[in-house]
Image (cartoon, rainbow, N blue to C red; front, side, top):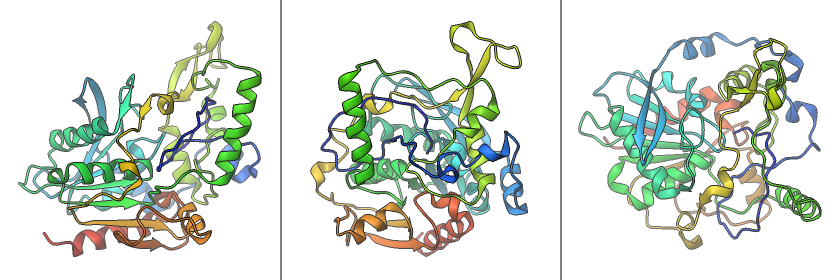
Length: 353
């Protein structure tokens, strides 16, 4: 996920928290990893070039009055996989992973409502996200062979997959969570919120939309991962960042360097967290009865591990099978994409068909 907006936050008792936070107290390689490239694309290895050259079927699917972006690879009639991204992300976060699964599966990556090219909503609800996922899966043929699809979700998307598995197990064959946390925010996030609350108390102002950048290079230079982490594979960051942006009119009738009057802004709804109804998404902090096979893949350097090492209990602890992906942080598909592919292939092969 990535973000560069500023917004008010309110005290919360949520058991799952994946909202963005902002701090300039980060090293340059974490705060602005793409800035040194000046808008140029970093060099990429052959495996990555092959993957992104496998152009998916791009469609829009209707659900609860919103149009949802869907990318699909693989032949119709093969077993289905539905891929769900994290907060402030989009379907193309899986575009370099999905082709390596498409030889055996019909694979769809969706953009959640309020993110990617999907429509925004006045209110976002866990039940709606679950219905959206099923609608996309059915519209793209993931149920076509008579077998229910496997849902796979990263981070916030993993939270939505978990919710759907708990409430609607009849909709899926199994579920895979990728570095999905169910605790409160880490200490530095809480401190950042406290500072922002003080600032807003002294100088109240309405929320503002995502900043509009005059050039693509300027926007790419502001791309960062949330939660913050180092990332060595800059070619993946660049690919994701470019597809996180849209052309937007510059404020006050300004003209950019190209004279078009348009700049670049992030695609996601900047007020999503204020519009997210989480009342039924946390199960009251009690682990629900899971009736489908489920496994959790996580980065061995992720914040989840740091928080467990500090003694913080995890929502998933001892409840489902967990597998660590070596040398990876929270954004496993960026840090260790091929290891994630191998892990997914193995888990999918071992589950009963």
